[in-house]
Every structure is written in structure tokens, then in C-alpha cells.
Length: 86
Image (cartoon, rainbow, N blue to C red; front, side):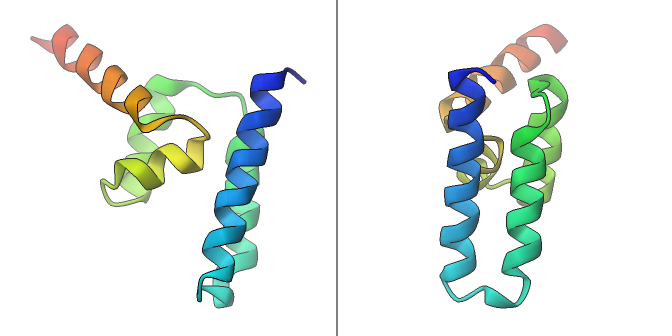
């Protein structure tokens, strides 16, 4: 496991635990499991970003957190994607 992968998993776990402890205890455990599963899977940004944005209802910060990436990465990928479609 590379340092980046370990950081991504740790960041996803931390985000999920904070979310679970912030008054969302009912489904916090399933959320932690989902976040860890996503973090441990190989990251395919062109497919992962739209799925994460849909899951988080367009919230770029939450989507980036779930992917373990910076939100600016999402903006850069979306900009490249839009430039390619034009």
C-alpha cells in the first residue's frame, strides 16, 4: 500500500467517524463501512467523481472527502471534462 492510498483510507475513515459522531449515529456504522470500501477501492477519478457527486447531492466538499481527495481535484477534473466536450 502506498502512502497516498493509506492517506486516502485514513482521511475517509476520519471523515466518516466525524460524521457518525456528529448526531448521525443511526446509520453511522454503515456510513463508515461505505466510506472505507470506497477508500480502499482503486480510484478511477473519471468514474468516481460523478458517482460521488450524485451520492452527495452535488456537494463537492462531501464528495471529495468521501473519495479522499481535495475538492480542487474535482473542480480540475470537471473543467477538463467540460473542455473535452466542447
